[in-house]
Image 1 (cartoon, helix red, strand yellow):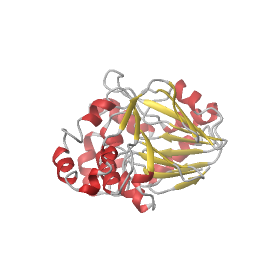
Image 2 (cartoon, helix red, strand yellow):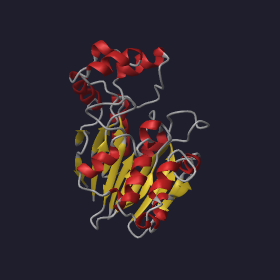
Image 3 (cartoon, one colour):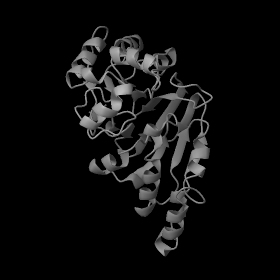
Length: 297
């Protein structure tokens, strides 16, 4: 099994990081995608993987930085001859989201133009995803994998349910947090995992700033808490991801980020602070994710 980090950034457009997306590839070549934020389809192709070959997509929640590349993923798969519908797993609201994209939706003109051609008429199922809204527990199983999920704590559940994930395949276990504040559900999902892929969006000081700024949610996992989660779950390896641009040197991000984070403190040195805080509790193998990082499990 290998995992390719398709996107390791957060909600801003970032020249150095695509938004959230992780691709799991089994030894037999089967692919499973978790989240589909901006830039993830491009990075999939950069990793020499055809989107049409990805059969299952799990959307952890409906924030834009986890779903906004999904139309591009589906339309690209259709144009590149996907033979059937992809399976899309997600929280309540996923069907509403998908149903308003293609036929009769936002991309209806694209659908009608392309479906006029005989070759595209031959694989219309590719533009009609098989959407399955899920609840905590075992949510997907095939000959290769079992995928479990549970609620995690990010935004109010009435706005969007948010899921963490556990995948079991080939005698290995990986867990993926989606976005969440520290919670017991994520510890259970990650129990004894070979690799935990967990959000670490902001350093401690940045979360404190956001809690007072009124610019956005601060329900993320601080580095110190992430180290404790990894220890409590007894994970064999930890990969931190979904970084909230705190290390960016981009002038635009510094300008627009002033209400979101303490911009005078931003820079590459902050990543060292994050590592130190994780290491307060966790002394196992640790990687700070970057786009197209490949993890062999």
